[in-house]
Length: 496
Image (cartoon, rainbow, N blue to C red):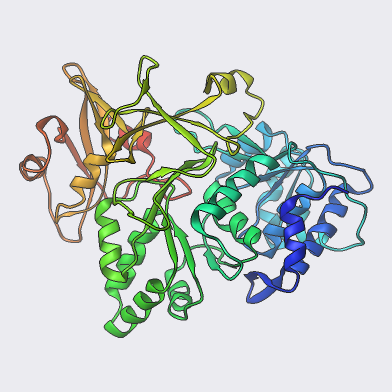
């Protein structure tokens, strides 16, 4: 039987702790054994699932990893579901992927049952799957399709991104090399497990390396900070929103606790930020509080990680560094020319073994997303003194105003340094004269007041006149997706 390499490696780690979940430590041997039982029950006497799609909604835990591996070992395609998705969002994924069945913990079946019955889909508990006897498992090669993850769908309904086992393996091995993963590493996992950040960067890399992954059902600062203070972790990965919340928790802690927490962060060998742009101000504030320089990187569902600041070397605030091992990057201008010079913006295009195989059941969209073998990311970037800096999405973060291409991310980073601004989102809104003008939605600091003239006057000394906001909304919150990322189309709608 040909076994996937991640399973073979896990067998070599045997009695080492793979996952801590539910207050218990679980070994690699128990993970391999449990996944084999699940695979056998999924096969139910058949020789191979033949890439049937199996959906599952499971929080971070031993069961999540065992079900994922069980699906793979039975020859199926894993379709992880968001824990927070509304019923219409779940229905879109289930019907678009044409899943074979849904798996969930026994305690959570009730919330899924009405939808499963309406769609005539079998709904099974993971507890029932992990019982029974082992059975012969199929040979699963690297070229087989392994997983479908759904994009955030900012411009249309979410598309299913199909990755093969070879794609996932390449994404993991690239990060093992670049970020120096070792079997003695340990990392907390509180990120959503229907996105590549949690699935590949944390869980996949951790288990490939033989490290320990500490599972949290969701992000909760209090217990997490106590584990940090106990020096339980050597690696830490989060999104910018979480770092902002941790900064707030540190600043609100009394001095002895703040010192304990900061010391726990300081001793880690690596702390990574991704999934959204990290404001340079947050980068500097985190370093001031903890002594840690965050490593910012760039990736997306379709490609895994592509660019990263170095593990050893300069980690430049506001930049995402250089191409990762085995990843090739180019910037392309609007007329298709390849950009060779620094300080000239262009679309990021990517080639490499980690690039996804297709959009599920969308051959035309897949074809249009590639040019001469290069995947068109739709993200704009510029090279500055050797490092790439992300300017934003062509569709939502690049504002075309008066002949200029403006980076909404750059403007946001400046506005966040205003003493009255806690958070903000910048978008372009239609304008007959300029094409688009800059609009800012702002959450103010507690008790602070802000109006457009005051903000414009303050910003005038810090930004060129064409970057100044022409419209301002002061809001109590900003619309976000499941990853905590601000959804710019929804912000634009707020301006009417």
